[in-house]
Picture 1 (tube, one colour):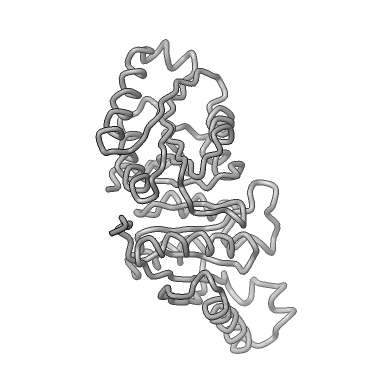
Picture 2 (spheres, rainbow, N blue to C red):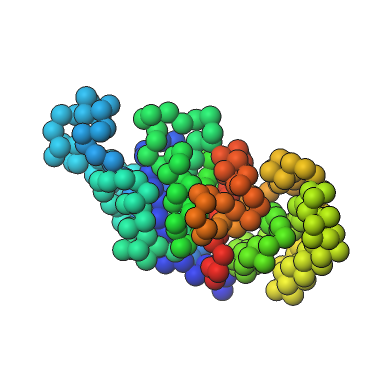
Amino acid sequence: MALKFNLKKILVPTDFSEHSLGALHYAAAMAKHSDAEIVLLHVMESYAENVALNHAINLTDTIKKAVNDKLMQIKTENMDLWGIKVGVRLEIGKIYKVITDVLAEEGIDLVVMGTHGSSGINTLEKYILGSNAYRIIRVADCPVITVRESNAEAKFKTIVLPLDTTKETKDKVASVIKIAKVFGATVHVISVSTRWDEWRIGGDKMKAQLEEVSEQIKKAGVQVLSTVIRKEDITASVLDYAQGVNADLLVIMTSAESKLAEFTVGSSARTIISESNIPVLSIRPGYK
């Protein structure tokens, strides 16, 4: 019997853009590997504030019907969703606040959301984009996968796992092992450091952490490769390495600290998420 993820519900926020529908395609592949239900969510900040939509459609009831019809059309006509239980929700309010509430109400195990990248955001595409994405990632108790490319495939044959020098960075290893075992993936563990890191912490300590994590993955029966990267630009190093090995997934650790969107690979996480053409899995410390 094939291995499956322990997922029951996957949330896919959509603004009906190509990118968010690409995330739905990605989530469908995940759902089929876990027998999970997909919750397809559209959030409108308010009818009054949505000037473009108000110009196109006058009446509140008509707006609600039109959006619900569109959600149902996606649910019934999208072949990726055939055989998958799909629930649809239309909510009104602040995007990240509504999504936070839905995560708790639905018992969501994973969020999959499309992003346009740093250069693709405009006023009409703000629903699941910009600062909302980082707020959702920061407050979500469950992992969040951000997908920039609308045609990204959820195949996970090559996973890149960057480590830094914090204790919490190892919390994501168990999740990576689960994914790797389901898909038969190879995990590339990379230790990313600057000269300052090595002077402050010690190169031997960083190498020992790399070996410890690699051994943990190997003992779980997963193929693993390990590499040390010493460059001053950590973000560029991680992205270049992931591109160079044709990675299918890049895994980073989020932080529950007060600072918005801080990660254990540094505050460069915004850049990693917005610039990576490879899907990014964000996991909070302590998640199992």
